Image (cartoon, rainbow, N blue to C red; front, side):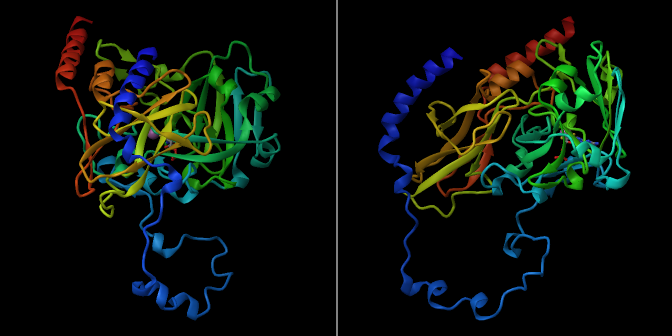
Length: 446
Ligand SMILES: Nc1nc2c(c(=O)[nH]1)N[C@H]1C(S)=C(S)[C@@H](COP(=O)(O)O)O[C@H]1N2
Ligand SMILES: [Mo]
């Protein structure tokens, strides 16, 4: 960590010398000027002003402008079971503004389809190693004092489509297995006062009422720390896709632990998942050892503007442009984000925009004057728990190449002279080869 900061200062000095002249403060960012006399959009009265608009009762639940029809979740056949019941609809993170995902665009991962639960028949069972088992209706649950918190949910397989080699040239399919909402519900530490958890309880099994059940076990420390039962998402009831009427929220931890359509919580003294093959993910590391418990999502970031989906093809040499992206960490709060224009040799510091919250997406920004020369653009986030995003080579030496989960290496974009943006990997193959060989040897020795 210390090294990193020293290096950063050194590198930043070198970098600033080179491009300081081309960087201008945000205040100077001006819109492209246009002459009124050749702009038909200014001279002619628009269609929509010549007639009445839609009656206000046309949509009593609003829908986006028809011109925004391209902003939608997308499903790739490589990532689904084919019939779309066990599948994932990816969030268009390249189209989002700020840090909140509109409910209709929240990514949706389901293993047995999206359950449509009747709230009147909904029951939540809390049992096992507790003094007083509870069965709650939805109304009873909502009587507990509520809290609203902003957190991302990220599937640990997010980014797995591109760690071995670039596979997709779209940000949506690369990193769209995550979204962020303001969640409202009750903290489990508050609700559990009513059940009296026994001191012998060490693990909690959470189970959904959908076809897949999605049984997951979670250590009691996390349950008592900041886990919640949530029933609302961005100011309205959870969407069916997010687990209506109630889901478990495990802030910052693997997406799969956030059990939707929650049916029961059972307190026990051992991790059920040790017996259940399918109920947790493990990861093989270069030493040949598998990591069994791997819950928090690592510090991570990606540049959304530009990206393959949001290229700079309409920019002219010398234009000022805002580079933007998202940074997040399941370990804590984002402290900063660095940006490279040369594939990781030099770094400058971006600024964090708006709310900077723990275990939450944080938007970052950097005003840049594009001179039309090709660049290799990337972002590197660091958090208040001391974690720094690794390069692909660092990630491969630590984690090997077998696991598809928890990939958080720096993402790099090649921006061509035409402003096209491509997903590229900046790698040190020699080091990676060595680490793979070490891993294979370790596995043999074990
Ligand atoms: N009951 C249930 N809960 C579930 C799942 C499921 O299939 N069934 N999928 C899990 C997985 S793998 C992820 S990544 C998150 C995705 O949450 P989302 O669909 O709200 O984005 O939900 C988790 N909770
Ligand atoms: Mo997931």
